[in-house]
Amino acid sequence: MHYSKVIKICIILAVLLFGSWKYFVFLEQNGCLDEGNVWDYNENRCREDCLAWNKINGCIKLTDDQIELFKKCRYKQAGCVAKEVFNEICLNNNLPLNKKTGECDTEFTLDKCHKLGEDWIYPKSCEK
Image (tube, helix red, strand yellow):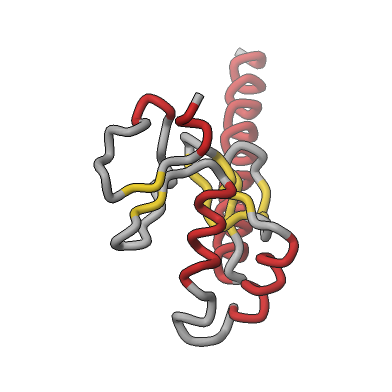
């Protein structure tokens, strides 16, 4: 009987500790996003060197110059960062860029090479 109480207490403590850890991570993620940064779910950390993060391609990397540009534009109006910068980020990360809309397919995989249509500039990795 005594052992069952100890086991129950251990289980309750484990649940409480795990729950508080998840809450702490949630708060850290929100703070990261509030600062205009990106949360890296693989490494469980806040990053300022990514434009975005997704499960397929991970961090969409920024150069040091681009990081500084985004920091300067953090609290300014939309359009502070030129369209050409976004185009450069897209192509530097081996992602396709839509010539008409400027859209970057951040969830691109190589099996989509030349399948998005003629309005897309494909990354060099599609030429192999």
